[in-house]
Length: 251
Ligand SMILES: Nc1nc2c(ncn2[C@@H]2O[C@H](COP(=O)(O)OP(=O)(O)O[C@H]3O[C@H](CO)[C@@H](O)[C@H](O)[C@@H]3O)[C@@H](O)[C@H]2O)c(=O)[nH]1
Ligand SMILES: [Mg+2]
Image (cartoon, rainbow, N blue to C red; front, side, top):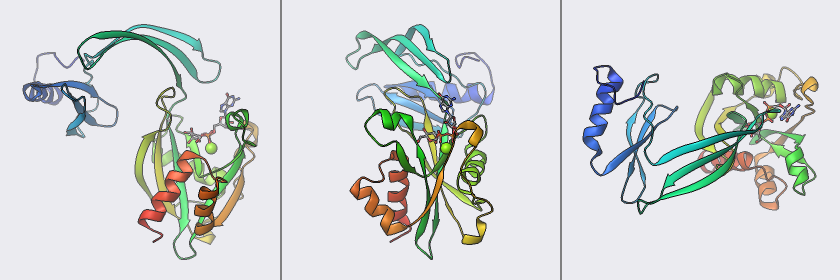
């Protein structure tokens, strides 16, 4: 339902309130993460105006963009589209642009750590895109997987066990992040979870039928940090997780 419909549902009341508050602002998006944002027209900074609002009928089309065309370039595995659109610049003028956008869904990742022994569990597997870009392709990474319609927490528990063999107890979501927002839609949900040696119930390794052949590495935390510095670990999500742990827990 468009938010300018007249009515008395919670979302409509919210919308009216937002509009009253709007003044110098334009509402830009009611996104899927339960946050409502508005955009300051003077400096284009986003400002959070409502959290955990109402899920279903709260879409308000932003008025700073007009999508004029959407062309499917490939849906061989995931979906690559070319969007043509007009975007309003900060001086108020409109500019036409095209952008290719690769949509492979969202993902989740987890760093398994043991505080007492100061260790972490990572994986090593072949990544074709890294190979194409001059790497051996064998990247050291935190366990991770695409959501495939599961919730981030549900998916990361399954993925951690599938890839590392560890059953994860409690997990903590620390943040989510766009990892390549210039071209890829994906948003990754980041988790950490403590493990003990006897939480390992299998070998991990991933699904052979999907081409996965994942090596499980248990590393001293200090060694892992040194590998970030030396460039041996150069996967973005893994660096972010290790540095989070260093800042918050492994002092
Ligand atoms: N046949 C085929 N298989 C594919 C293709 N692309 C991916 N796959 C397979 O699809 C499976 C996806 O495995 P997951 O464990 O769910 O995902 P992931 O590849 O580990 O992705 C995780 O790490 C990425 C890199 O950091 C993240 O981008 C992603 O969000 C997720 O966290 C893997 O077996 C992968 O080989 C493709 O084009 N063709
Ligand atoms: Mg994976």
